[in-house]
Length: 288
Image 1 (cartoon, rainbow, N blue to C red):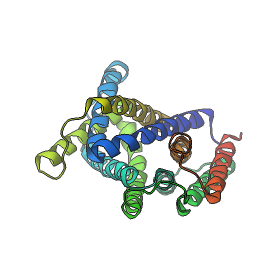
Image 2 (tube, helix red, strand yellow):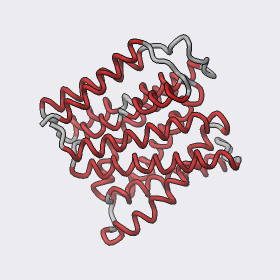
Image 3 (cartoon, rainbow, N blue to C red):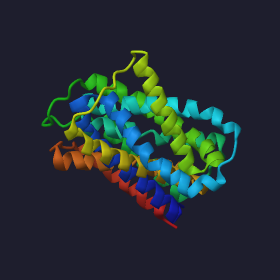
């Protein structure tokens, strides 16, 4: 069964990530996915660094796990760049659910390498939620939806993002155990910003400034992403990586719902069936 804390942290992460990704669509269309990611990470770092100092400074200690921070940051930057690229080029109601299926990788790795053994009801919930994600991602966009920039680029980017996030959120468990959750996220954000700056200096990526009217969306994204990141990191300290990872993948339900309400993106019958399976999974993970 999923504990109340697993459900709380997993669903909080889903809300933060899902709402932030919805806001990312408009910002990415305005200034491009690289600048969106860079400035979102800067805002997130400005929030998390003071929190880490206030709540976890007394528990800071030297550790060999510092060596894995650049690797974690590189994987996170890779997954996040392709996330925002998929959002910019693809149909939001299709690429978001596909990316959200990353818990399939996280849960499998947790079971194989961490000995994570969710009880039967929770395991059934994980299967139902993942099945719902598959149903949503395998269905095409509704024919009445506005055409994307490039559906193929969006789909390939979503697959790459899904793979990267699956590995990242599994590996994050090790950093959280050594650093404390908020500190671990702060270190990953710091290293990630450094990677993007180096890429810009090398001419691989262009950052540049932001128009003033884009900043509100970027700040909101940074705050929401911080909520999701911290909720996930705090939750897996003592909770189930498989359950929290799967619940965090429900961010696609938030993103798709907001896209349907505000962007008038319509869902197909298969996507509705997938949403129903996802919510059934949440109920099963809540059963005691």
